[in-house]
Amino acid sequence: MRHALRAMLRHWGGPGASDVAELLTSELVTNALIHTDQGAVVTATVVPDTSDTLRVEVRDFVPDLPAPYVPHADAGTHEATHGRGLVLVEALADAWGIQVQGQGQGKPGKVVWFELYGGAA
Image (tube, rainbow, N blue to C red; front, side, top):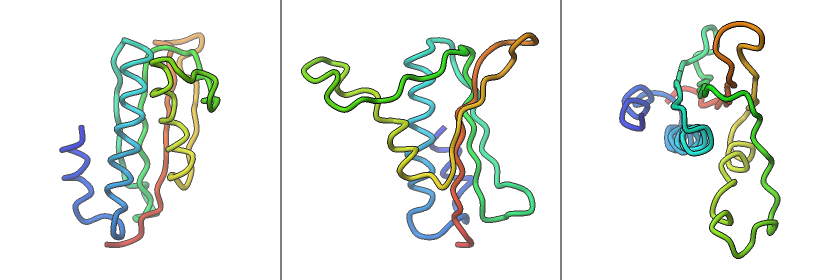
């Protein structure tokens, strides 16, 4: 995934923008794989009509929403190293969100997405 995203973003964004996109995508994919154990589908697009906006969506197949990270709530356990992915997304993305998918139709799940306004390279 990182290789494909890096290739896609070779000429997108200002200095460091593609690095941030790669970090945030990696965090969301890791969350989906670790917390759902059911795989994920990743979509990365430059939003039409806004050639400087990158939107990345990571879809998993579990409708449960992620629990927010609470600092020091899990100190001293192996869980202390987990739960910071969405904190990074919130801090570094220009916009982000979570949408529940497939309620009542199709496969249930959710999409966690972020947008970066990178501007022209």
